[in-house]
Length: 381
Ligand SMILES: *Cc1c(COP(=O)(O)O)cnc(C)c1O
Image (cartoon, rainbow, N blue to C red; front, side):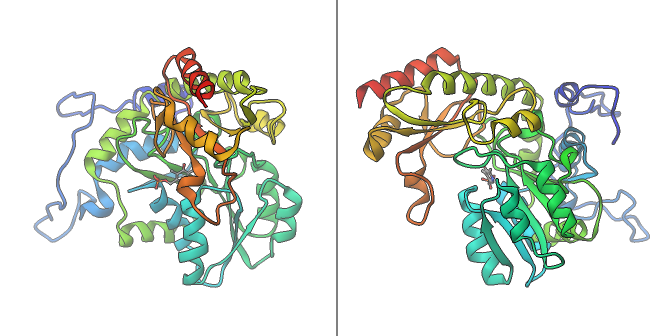
């Protein structure tokens, strides 16, 4: 859907100018109907048969995301995991795929557990190094490469342009988990990715009150048709109310992401070199891994996610998370309220994440309050 004349901020704020022609309502209705009436001759001229895959509540949210990502088509799913796993289920047993060795933990577990048992040949590599990607690609055998950038929980950056070139030369598809960047900061399809995935639970919705996932494709192709079938037949689809809430949440996407990004940079700079902190991981810091690539492929900020390592180790990390008041001790990210999390506790044994690491999701509170709360918690250990 071409909409060249207006800016993405306006697309999001107006949900692509949705208007109900019949009632003149400026917000869409919520259709609570699992089924749709057949015509007398047994046809479905409305184009809708059954809610599972044809819920009218998907239409506007999918259209907004397609426009923001500059893609061909978007599919909503019941969670980010449902969206991500549909990409891999659209492949065939025996296909070789590459994924990062440090990435969103639940998807890493699904790939090494379920997907491998199902027959995918999953290889985890150091995705941020193009030479490693080049060496791991098997032309004709590798079917898909999965990139997460910035990547949980060290916020490392993968160069989408450079990776896409290598992946396409080997005849494979490139999918990017762009959850942490959001379409405000990065448009992976414009850099050559074939698919972009979001956990819409995070920035797209932004209010920590639902789970949702999205996939957007650059072009229609055979793999996309299989992904469509995975959703339609597997049925991991979003409910009507959640779809409506997601559309509502996206109206403030740009304000939320820009505020969180500006605050996160401020917080990273403030705590970089702090006596209680051994290391700050944030792609906006000039000393950080991938800062130069981040400057090229992120515009308007480096996101609202950062991590810190405590100089006094795992006990200090747990103590800090236990004593912050504004920063809520909870998993997830991308909501209006700031969260703090000891990743080692949630990932458990086998995790490559350092045990003294705290992951911070910066919300839209006043940045001075967030800094003061963390300073106080650090002083108490
Ligand atoms: C949360 C998250 C997911 C999974 O999404 P759910 O909505 O929780 O299923 C995938 N990737 C990243 C980067 C995430 O943060």
